[in-house]
Length: 347
Image (cartoon, rainbow, N blue to C red):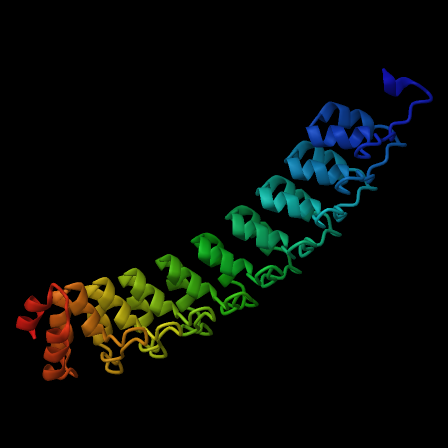
């Protein structure tokens, strides 16, 4: 009835947030009201509110109102790339974060939509968000765009979509990203220089580690800059035998790389944790150094296993050779460990 009045202004906004009737209806998902407003030629399609700087299309995408997005995109005058003034989020950005494949598809069908537009707060792109949130369908739609950049990292910690997917254990997204020829599997974050392989090994995502190691250009020895821990170090520390085996199958792996905090090697960590299977795998390497001591207490893997009372690991290490029996006896005899007696007999 109001819209039938000759002197009605369909664009009159409130003074609190600067929202027009179309903005309110789009945000709330009132399809009938949106349709009536859009039937008028004098309705402003791109007027943004004054609080967030978000247009009707931006609000509809943010709230997941697919039918309203469709109605708005049918109007030639709608700008699908308008970013809000709060964080620089586009309608595509909001839809990708929510994983609304229907809305993402409609927006990408517009030739003028830029799939790489990042927000102004942390530099996160629609692909970055979809990968982080595990929205496989949305990632697939975005990767089908010829102009998509799959390596764009955020500005907060420099994490790429691949790194997030690897850390989150989303194998489907990792697979899609690695199928691209322009993906860089070694891109590390800017905070601690952690790579996708590092994150997958640290989280124990065996399937993702396998996919990454199938890449010829992967670097399996990259350590982070916080403590200098490699993917192999983390797998040994975490007791992930499958990941350790895959890493040790590579000729270019360095099994002796120690962390920079206490200079503890993968073998040291496995012995300390009592991971017999990993200790055996590491000792099968001809280039393994089984006597490397840490810098905190000067303990070797054998010493650490002895201190923990891991008799079987002590036996495995002694069978490996390279240990001087007299020095072992002296070390054990001087120890105040309650398990010393049993281990002296083994030695």
